[in-house]
Length: 283
Length: 351
Image 1 (cartoon, one colour):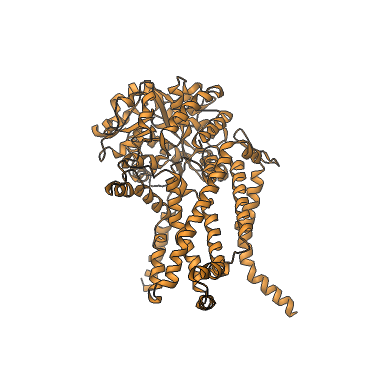
Image 2 (tube, chains in turn brown, blue):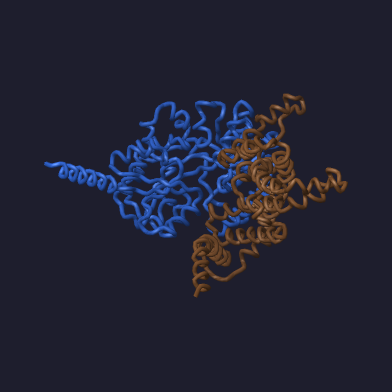
């Protein structure tokens, strides 16, 4: 009887989250999966069970290229963001006096407070031919003519990195701050130098924080439409941009759904690759 | 009257007033951003004592999907690309319009576009605004003479200083015109030639940009030329940056037009028709032409009596006969050709 009551209570606690997940993830996902198997005949949607849209992904070079471009940008952003965020998190966790730590963290995430779209447009102006960066480089005599920075992959990566360094700093900091200083002291006592201590003790112990942040960066970056659209200048297209093209003019929901399923497949693979180190409780 | 009675009376009056306010008739319109200017909408609301709810959309596909998923009566008015009226009619989205109540007799004849706005002899929409997808440029940075020909406007001379407007139909129309192909006659066989012109254009372009991005790029000096631009891109900047201008090259350019119609199944057909008539009237047309979102030529020539001389100068009112003669309407591909054109466009972008 008590067991039964516990079970009911348990389900009662789980039910809201479960219903939420079913309503806002499972059902839309099933609908999207079914839609990806439908086809467009002219401008008419035909429900059915066809892999035509997936075959199209293999046939059309620009669709394949969009997947490659998305992967290249996402991997670059993830690696650069980790390389920048780790030292920043380290400095905040171990070098900034405790009473200033809160302020340092606040300052590091301050850019989060501005709108994502506004921030992207701001970068466009900073990187423009007559923007701050070009003017500074010309002023310093490093270049004589403005270089093209805006509307390039470099601009897209810069916009992304600016955002994700903040996110990664938080996840890595949360991990670093939980580390007992005794680990470092023990390593030093055993004769390890600073580099060896970092490589063999600190880095393995903070890997869950890095991987968790990197995974979140990967997921958010590969599905983002705004940044490449504003900063990339459409000089190359990512998967979300191609999805938007299918919806905007043609209302080709089946092909757009197939592309979205592929995107989810890539994210799933990324999850499987990083699952071993993913520790969401560390953030 | 005791205190309680006074309170009850007051409450009743307030409730009745609130009821009247909430009962105010509302009109739901699916529109482009130029219709969201209060200067355009408020006079209609005041004249009819109604509230007009506006929702912006981008891309006919998105609008048709939204309408198809709505219940009959959810939407009353639709603004749509002139070449896509037939798509909306095919989908059963537009209701017939009484032509005798529309002032199309006052319109510039070239933009009445009866063939586009009607299906099987029944009129479903009326042209409300038009303009050109042509060449916008910074006259202080490029040689204006070069902009008078499509062969020099996107030539190597301006490598890295060009932005292409991010809409495949008008830009492919311009590529077709550069190759001597009429936009109305574009077929699958022409796509190779159009594709090679697009590749040339793309190879010299710094970006392929939407409305806001193209405008920003030109205004900030990121680029000096926008292929596919026109009065809709530079007119709102005319006062602050008069050096930003536009022209129609000698080979011609593409003409865009937007139409307005009443949504089938509306529960307020009379009010919806009144809105369409207001937009087509000289006053409505003048306000729409100079909307804060983007400017464009009014379809109704009588709007010239309402527009100021300065506004007409920015719109190049007096040159319209020449421009209309020199330009061709957007390509209007059927479904299969549309897919081929979009594929070609995306392949070009990904080069």
